Length: 129
Image (tube, rainbow, N blue to C red; front, side):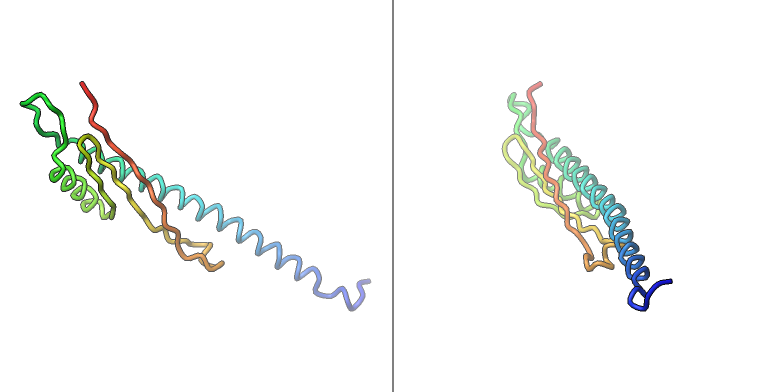
C-alpha cells in the first residue's frame, strides 16, 4: 500500500503530461498556420510584383523599361484588392514587393503567444524576349 507521502504524485505527473500534450498540439496546429501564412504572403508578394512588372513602357522605341508610376500603382491595387499591406520598390527593370501578415494563434494563446508576423519578399524582373 502507498505511503502518505506518495499521495498526489500520479496527479502531478498526469498534469505535467497533459501540459506537454497541449504544448505539442499547439505547436503543430499553430505552426501549420504560420507556414500557411508564410505561403500566402509569398503568393501575394509574387503576384503583386508580376502585376507591377507588366507595366512596360518605351516599346515603340525598342526599349523595355518599367513605367515606375504605373508599376507601383498596379502592385498597390493588387494588394489592396486582396486586403494585404506591402512595401513596393520599382526599378528600371524590376518590381520588388514585401508583404507582412499577422497570424493569430489558437492553442499557443494559452501559453501567452497571441500572434506571429510573417514576411515574404519577391521580385519580378523584365526579361529579354
